Length: 154
Image (tube, rainbow, N blue to C red; front, top):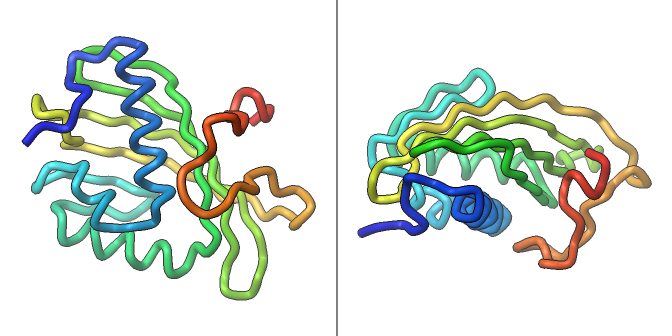
């Protein structure tokens, strides 16, 4: 099974890969997201170190139980060979109804079949007011005409 586009990446294919990842994460479905990673994929997400589908699926399940109304935008930063660097921001609310915008960078390394073998994410959270929210589309993929990070000044 392959997950095109495959490495080595061009700017066009890396941009496509980034949008596909964004759409998958915006589904908030751990099974959809987990399928994009190799069975032994290694993650560093903040201070969590994960390996393999079972740990990734469990992590994502807990994440989306805590981070409600999750909406994410990813943007290509750079690419070379089988690696892609991404910057992102996502908005979410906690169980008390407080809102946050989380900013971060990810480094991705892909296997030859197009699945991600390694993901390193650094993320910071900023408390925001409801009126500061910028991501208002219905739950699911970001609409094609919705501004990206650069357009939003993020």
